[in-house]
Image (cartoon, rainbow, N blue to C red):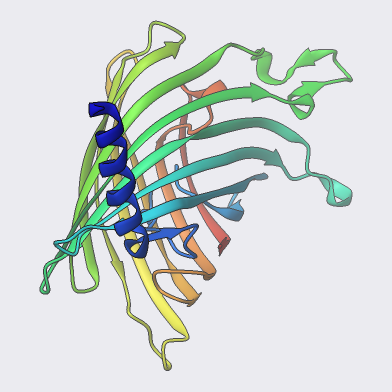
Length: 274
């Protein structure tokens, strides 16, 4: 009898909350971080002074969203990304050197307090990395640079809370990696950043933006990755649109097969925000 009563109470509460639940909303409860590499992107990043470029194919979607009585918004979503490293060659050829996959689930929260907004994102994700045929030199029958494939993967929990006031957002977070290959790598990293996103100029058609992200990774010791992005978004500042931007990166490669290789470059990118 008690189980039946509990079931009735649960069903009544769920029915009452239906008007507060949105399924598959068009936007995201937690807006992607401007300068963070591991965010949903759909576009290209062309390095200057070199022949490398990156192809990002990925998206995040909110599966459902619940408005709580105090006005706070809670959401559950999913992530599925690929980060692909290509080389530019003659005759418009772009051999694929390496590709990384990220997929997982996320929970998000935000609340508007009038003068400011507080929010957070909790991720449970998996990343794996692989060399592709473009990394193999058929002429010499060897891997490029003498660097053969290695097993690289990690599963982690990441928490990033933020504080937004006006057109600025400040954030800081940390992650615990509960499984990683190679096993000699550390099991934590830390992140902080600041970003600016204009509410729009020219009747809201264009939104200039800028962001800086600092990530402290744990390899054989703690090391810093710096990422700076500046650009313009055409469309909704906090929603769908098209972006053109400049990115400067300095630190260790975002691609798992090159995790211990130092990289520093400037690049220009285009991105579709779906």
